[in-house]
Amino acid sequence: MQSIIEQVQAALGGHAGLALGYGLIAVLACQLVLLLWSTLMRLRHEHTQQRLDRERLETLVRAAKYRYKEAQEVVQGWNGYRKFTVTQKSCECEDVYSFYLMPHDRKPLPPFKPGQYLTFSLDIPGRDKPVVRCYSLSDSPTRPDCYRVTIKREKAPPERPGAPPGVASGYFSDYVKEGDLLNVKAPTGHFFLDLSKTTPICLLAGGVGLTPMLSMAKAVAESGSRREVWLFFGCRSGNEHMLREDLEELRRHDNIRVLVCYSRPAQTDVRGEDYDLAGRVTVELLKEKLPSNNYEFFMCGNGAFMMALNDGLEAWGVPEKDIHYEAFGPATVKKRAAPVVAAVTAGPACKVTFAKSGKELEWKPALANLLDFALEQGVRIESGCRAGSCGACSVAIKSGDVDYVKAPDAAPEGGSCLTCICRPKGDLVLDA
Ligand SMILES: Cc1cc2nc3c(=O)[nH]c(=O)nc-3n(C[C@H](O)[C@H](O)[C@H](O)COP(=O)(O)OP(=O)(O)OC[C@H]3O[C@@H](n4cnc5c(N)ncnc54)[C@H](O)[C@@H]3O)c2cc1C
Image (cartoon, rainbow, N blue to C red):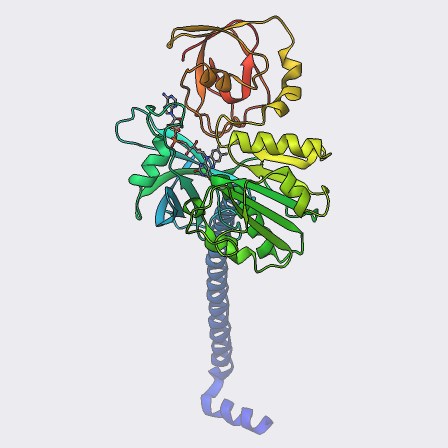
């Protein structure tokens, strides 16, 4: 080794050491520059990486917030009206149609509780403002892609044959077609079946009052629960026997008993094939078929149907807490409204004036609300849900004040009242 260095020194002469020194310095300087360069590059890369990470995080937060909002909408429904497309319209029986509705924005649908309803705001030609009506969801709540409502055309009442037929139900029956867009509020309503319970239930349906009952029975069937269900459906004859396939499907579940009663079977209706029993759904029938009165009863039908069954069930010893009902129209089980409103009826008798109709009337404390009072006195007030939710029955108060039987779901406009859930506090003048 020594000899090699000596040989190089000899070959390079006296300046060799110096040259070697410069060479080493140059190499070191190059290494230093390279080190600095790579450090700079690394810092720059790290900085870019951090910026990208931050941007990615911000995107993720935004996406999470969006998904949270969407999930909330799916769980809780949506605010106000949302556009739905009618994807299918099918005739169930004479004057009854089912409408299948999919959200126009194709976003997921919130589940609903069996028994709840949708509120529609309909732009009907010839009407100066939208007509608001509610329709119960008639299918199982486990269908995630579409909702179904089943609507019966309302004819003029028998005691007023000259009255115009139902506005909204006529519009649905005659004009609404597949592909049309409708404005719909999210499912709501306090009349529903609690699927977390296992108590046996008895569902009593009269006519189109079958819709919420069917949803309840289908919900039990599709949940796989062994809960005992009895469904009594009453209609006049085969012409009014709606949603047959769904009812037949329910019979396949051995925990669900379906009994279809025709009050006036046609000659062509075959007992055992089209219907089970001739006659109405009465408490006597329930006593004959049910092993006991130990059921939670849900009913929906016209006024006479519900009043008779409610009275009969109470007389049979069914506690009031186990009787639930939904009224589609002015017909309520009024007796039950009385204790609720007793607290607010105290006070002197009062006068209610319907200014536009020119009627000044003595208030009837036995009535549950101002809407029923108005309709009974022949004053037309629009109505929808009859539960203080849709706002259709809102009327301006010209003077006086009202008491609410239950808190409104959404506060009415200032100076107005929701007539379906309020009563006069004293003399009252309404702009109706
Ligand atoms: C929570 C809830 C759920 C519901 N679910 C369903 C459902 O699933 N299916 C269903 O079919 N319905 C359902 N309804 C009823 C529905 O909301 C409507 O009330 C029904 O369709 C009638 O509305 P309409 O606009 O056709 O009739 P309206 O125009 O409101 O008329 C109602 C009745 O009054 C008569 N009438 C009109 N003008 C006069 C007058 N001047 N004098 C006397 N009588 C007159 C009409 O002939 C008709 O018989 C439900 C209601 C509620 C509150």
